[in-house]
Length: 179
Image (tube, rainbow, N blue to C red; front, side, top):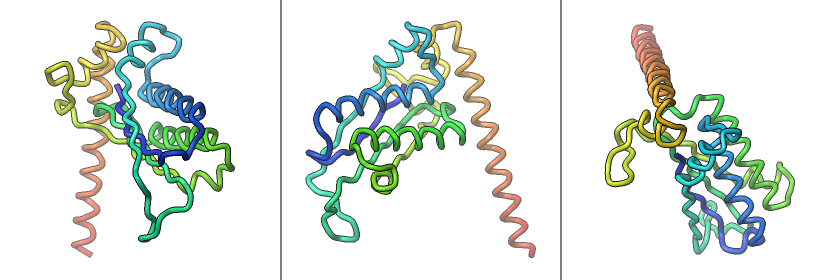
């Protein structure tokens, strides 16, 4: 259930390239959330709850000067537990490649002007349809009630990873203060 904030300066892309990019970004994010393109109902439901908010800045500045080239920013927001480090890295690469294709330039030229921020919203902090939706609820909504357990497992796995990172950071901090 990704929400995408997409910043594209006016006129940066041809209209048909921009429309194709927006469609492709939604598909990329749904895929990286782990929803299955081959299960038609699941894919269609995921598409129906994937929203893209297109932002058109009047200008973009770099180091205080108006940028002569378009700059792109993609902030993908999903419920907690949808990304792993590997899926975040793949998502950034795939989103950047989609923008490169849309602009029609070289990867080296365009990629340096693309920023991608894959973000997760803590479980219990995602609201829609007038209520708070938890990760298992969202999984069941998109993939079917029989898939609720997948949401529970993803969330538990993500929390184990976060706890491990927190403990490793605390251990590193104690090592630094005792040396």
